[in-house]
Amino acid sequence: MTSTLAYATTSPTAPLAPFSFERRAPGGEDVAIDILYCGVCHSDLHTARNEWNNTLYPSVPGHEIIGRVTAVGSRVKKFKLGDTVGVGCMVDSCRHCQPCTDGLEQYCDKGFTGTYNGSLYGGGENTYGGYSTHVVVRESFVLRVSHDASQLAAVSPLLCAGITTYSPLRQWGVKPGHKVGIVGLGGLGHMGVKIAAAMGAHVVLFTTSAGKREDALRLGAHEVVVSSNAEEMATQAGRLDFILNTVAAPHDLDAYLSLLKLDGTMTLVGAPATPHPSPGIFNLIMRRRRLAGSLIGGIRETQEMLDFCSAHDILSDIEMIRMDEIETAYARMLKGDVRYRFVIDMATLATPAA
Ligand code: NAP
Ligand code: ZN
Ligand code: ZN
Image (cartoon, rainbow, N blue to C red):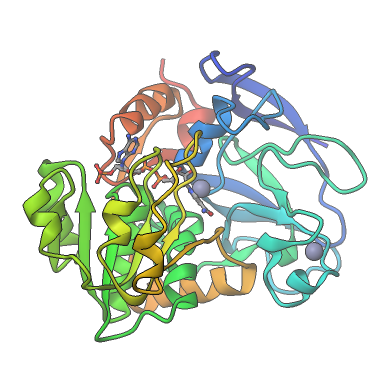
């Protein structure tokens, strides 16, 4: 067992604060990792505040982890001491069901074990995430990171925001010639813009924040639509092949469904605390449109995404914060004021400000 420093919350209203707990000693298939950086996902906030009504307290969020290997178990083959690695949203799954066998561990029939807020198999324990100094993870859930050492902080958001946008863009076959809408320019949305553009699509970014227009173009969008502007929205009616909706709050889906072409699909990845108003039926049936959902991505696909981003020089645009600035970061996230992912420098947890 190793004593581990972390930041945790103990109730939906308690601010995150220093916390310590014991990590297991690495077993034969485990990799022990010192955490360098951890991205801040809106799911961390939903969980800390129990917005999905499933939070186990104390809760240590964080599932965009980049770190360095400090120990490996005797049966570990892929990693050695000193390697730079990533850990995303999952640390285990049943490994036997059809989805697991197909590399779709996120859809494990028994439910994957979350990096945080996940029960470990054989016990009802809570898992504690990346707002901590180190973590111990089974080898098969650890990712190889080939980016340059100077880029590691900006790589951490790929472990959730990157894969959550890459996976549906691949699943729905986005390619050159497609016109793709990305809704919401936050952590997920800005990765969606970059990845869809790298896949060769014509990217239209939809935002509620007129002030993000220039940034969206710089990040790779070809057009930007401010969603509150009816005239701008009308220019896209019936023109999009695919829409990836990343918004973290309930909103009118019809406004976006009506922008899809015949046979177009809108995939929801945003997971608000309360449901969207139900969309109208005619908007779907008149053009055989589809409304879909998607959950992160499997381990094999996460590795593919990391390698894709490395090959295309794709990083997250980040704002580095200290661990003790997390509550301010959450407050800004709730206002849509994220440019475009907060990343915690984990050295600030081990050595707090004087
Ligand atoms: P984020 O950084 O906070 O970005 C969300 C963006 O949505 C905002 O920046 C904002 O962009 C837009 N937005 C519009 N109205 C909003 C409102 N009332 N409240 C909040 N945002 C609003 O969040 P994120 O980390 O990208 O996560 C987005 C959602 O995806 C969350 O619900 C998260 O839990 C979920 N998620 C799902 C998966 C999955 O596997 N499906 C994985 C990770 C995260 P504009 O200013 O451009 O309008
Ligand atoms: Zn996440
Ligand atoms: Zn399974």
